[in-house]
Amino acid sequence: MPAPVDKEAVRLEIIKACQRCAEDKPLPEVSLRDVAGELGVTHASLLYYFNSKDDLLMACGHWAGGEFCKMIRYWFDTHDLADYPSGDDYLNAFIEFTLEDKSNETLPRGVVMNCALGEYSAGLKKVIEQESDNIRAALKYGLEKAFDRSISEDTAGAMLVIFYGVYFCAFNNALVPGQTKAVVSCIRQLLDMDARR
Image 1 (tube, rainbow, N blue to C red):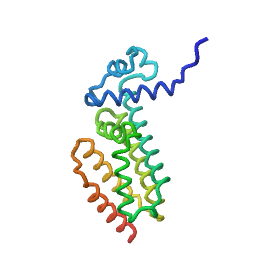
Image 2: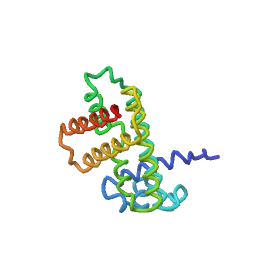
Image 3: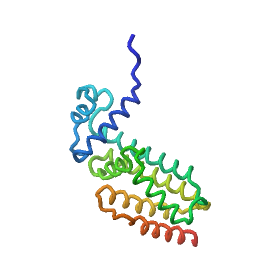
Image 4: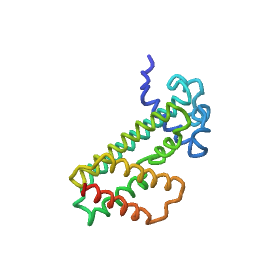
């Protein structure tokens, strides 16, 4: 009797293959046939796991957002503000980690690719909205933990926009070395204004 197939594990491999295909061409142009070719399987076999390309792209969106949230929480849970010379150094180390750590596979590239497709379909737009809310909540959690105080929803939302801007610039090779220090300065100003409310 053949061993049972772990459907979720196969779905994850398909999602990762889709992300790899997007290294060579824009995600909207990646076809199910491209993904099947990347995996060395038939196009028809993918339809057992995903009903359509839209279904696959939505799964990619949830995967990228979920992985990014895990990465954010992991970093803040394993790095203590007291171990850094200043709050700015702490925040800069966080940003550098999210941009450079190779163990993150396609992140934040996967997040950026999926977020850029909000107008591709109504389903993907909804996924992006959900995952952006989750990422904002993860950032809020981490910053509240690090600085030991509450942060308003407005400030957390503004931080999400700033972080997305950093990742879009990095994705497009428009982030100049050292520029994250200026970003950190803006984040600190936001946190200081929030504390005075």
